[in-house]
Amino acid sequence: MAEEIVALRWEEPSGAGEGGPAIVLLDQTRLPVDEVELVCADAPALVRAIQTLAVRGAPLLGIAGAYGVALAAARGDDVDEAAELLAGARPTAVNLAYGVRRAQAAFHAGGRAGGGGAAAALAEARGLHADDARGSARMAEHGLRLLGGLLPGGGYRLLTHCNTGALVSGGGGTAFAVVRAAQRSGELRRLWVDETRPLLQGARLTAYEAARAGVPYTLLTDNAAGSLFASRQVDAVILGADRIAADGSVANKVGTYPLAVLARYHRVPFLVVAPTTTVDSGTPDGSAIEVEQRAGGEVTEFSVPHAAGSRSAGAAVPYAVAPVGAEAYNPAFDVTPPELVTALVTERGVVSPVTGDALAELCGR
Image 1 (cartoon, rainbow, N blue to C red):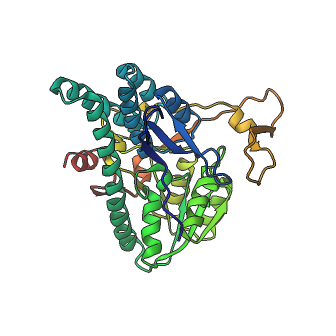
Image 2 (cartoon, rainbow, N blue to C red):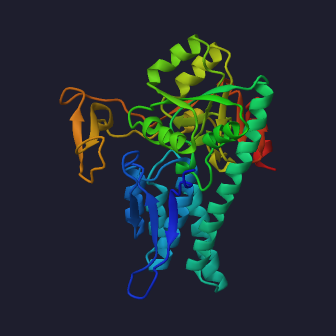
Image 3 (cartoon, one colour):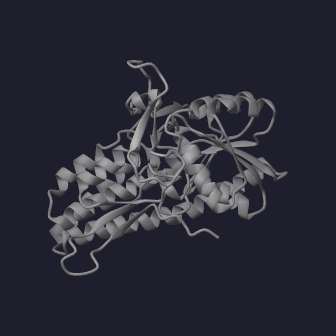
């Protein structure tokens, strides 16, 4: 059995003269070919890792942001300046700012109490990390129970998009944690994995996690999903979220909204699995969600390592797939309205139907 994936850890120096603490990441830009760790010794390095997607996924970004504040505090850097840099590194995933603000508040409270702001920030980050792991396990339980109610015959054929496993979490993930629970119960027949253009998080990351876990999976291009629905080979869609507005609108990796429309037309359950920290009560509806626009080169070029397919440490080489100068539309996310979401699975329970009132009641418990 493969070892559990550890996407992020805090590392203290092991001896005198070895410098300060650091945040060590599994560099997700190098997967699935190379399992390489990236060491971030200060907040700017972590910001670069976040922006280049070396570390990604809503829950893990919250954890990373909190540890980034703790790192700045341990180094004696300007914590508030570091917090602003970290919180603004990616605009759509609400967990990033949430984690940063929690550790920043703990730092200031610890300093006022005389117990040491740096120690308080680190304790807060570790607490957030542990909370996420526990929440992941609870989401898996709630999601498996929900699947049993929606699909009583078992033998689930589930379609997912982007990546929602241990690479995005302090635990087993969000939607992928439910998939693993279905696998362990013997009820999973097949996981359909969208490749997730343009950065291929499904092909590179979800397939990587599924292969490690022994999950029966099949990879498909994003635009092949419609034919799967038409041939009645999808029992449910299950995926994550980067931000959920107060009315239940879901911002997730671009390509999610078309799946929701397909699911509604074909009368297939569309399930979103996310912790309550992804719910942003300050964002009233989907139109108020800021959607990150990324560089057009992610669409017009592929970046492939030297000797692609081999374990090469060479720098990435761009390979053009469009004419030079072609303009590209490249939103990182799209927004699915709540009426297309069958159920929202959180660590506190399930919301169905998804409404603002039901969401507020759940998050207020």
